[in-house]
Length: 410
Image 1 (cartoon, rainbow, N blue to C red):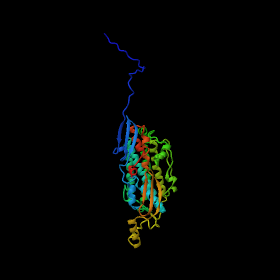
Image 2: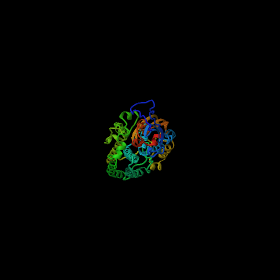
Image 3: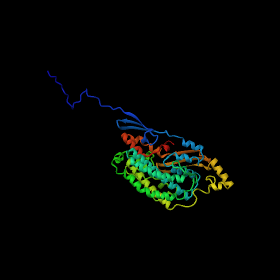
Image 4: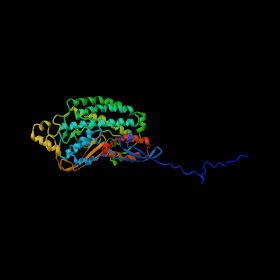
């Protein structure tokens, strides 16, 4: 005898219906040694499947106490420590710090020194953006971009070595000037680099700009609204990518930037793709600035000549004059003598606004020093930005923010 089964109506809700399916969230530690975190950033992610429900950035793995160290260093002795902030653009860090101290001392540097600093900063911007672009390409699967960009950076490092004696940590700037004048023929070699770089840059960007895989990974991903960018204190390309055309070189010029013509690229959507486009155009504008500086490169001294208590005398005078020998000895042992007071200055660095707040009680050592690190502020938006994205999108977002943990942790 066949057994009959009664099938309930598919649309009917019975008391025995199964409860709503519940998923269990997973906690994932991304970093601090994960290659996409670009250093020692750790992200503590909460995942619902592949979707990020919570993101907590954990920093401090590279903390060295730079701000406290400054209290026990003369003003010039602290210059090498600024190299280790955004270590992709040490020349720019040196300049930002030196200008802050010079404003404390109300010291004006000669035009030739300003021109050397502007060229150094813009070449550092190109170098930093090239590394960010190459690393970003690897993050999203484009290996060739990395090879192209690092080839160009190698050319820049040769120029840096000729100018400063070092490739990576340059320690080139001094309070009141720079360590030495540009070597003979150096400006011509910089001009030659700029001429050959622009077509290569167009070729590099062409590998990504209309690449479907790259666009799928970046367009509409990690959107930062104009309001959020301002509220979270974002600066630099991350702020300009969200449609805010703030550039300290234009809005609060320093080192003679008001004399040069350049455009400030601004995004419209504020996504990863816009931030990539902004950095690509910024490199072209940096070349434009460098060409203008070199076309009218000033003659004259490369350090202040009327600040005996701040600037060291030339080596030939130290070796031939007792007065200059004593002056050099006092500056080396006690540091440049600053008046009491306080100052805050920020410069437009590759990662954003790098600021130095210096408090002096007189003498050759700062009483307090505070560093406004752009990468630290830019990373503050990660909890809001990553929530609701896929895990793979987190990699694209991190690469588009282009941060450096050296200045974030300080």
